[in-house]
Length: 198
Image 1 (cartoon, one colour):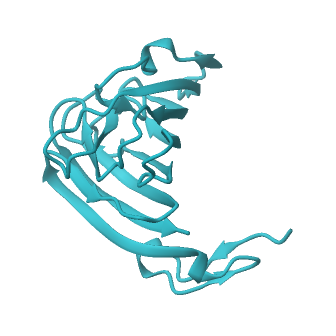
Image 2 (cartoon, rainbow, N blue to C red):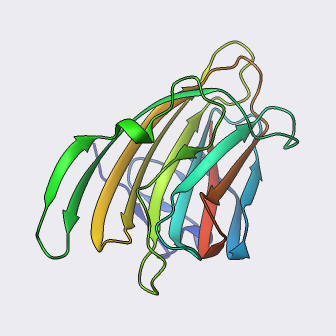
């Protein structure tokens, strides 16, 4: 199996893959740049998988969670029932603590609330979160909709965390939209790129 290397250095200017996959396998759909934005919303369609890349998402408020929710009614409501699990690794800049732990307060059990993707990201000029999220077959009207994410953030207490989330939207209705936001305050800066895969 060969490695895949992205060309052109930036995902929003992607023109080709080098390796075993072709660009036709992953289609760039859209991107959004935050600038003191309360949220960023995307419309989902008929791709079998969607992949979102989060690039330097910087919160306006200190110690907040980057989070998301789904809509099944074209964005009128973001309240789809979800069950999820979460764990993360962490290491403080001071080397005072590090570890790997299940994150019981980060997961959901049949909740319509927003799902966290990070620990408490800081709002200092050099603090942000970056990562990736995948959603599988959101237009299905037969099965629940699975998703996974992996995000790395610089927290408000000078710590690096690498958070992993997985779960499912417990509905057989098609998911029509997804919304990303901070748990409090605006997204001061950052970019989200959306790709579709068949």
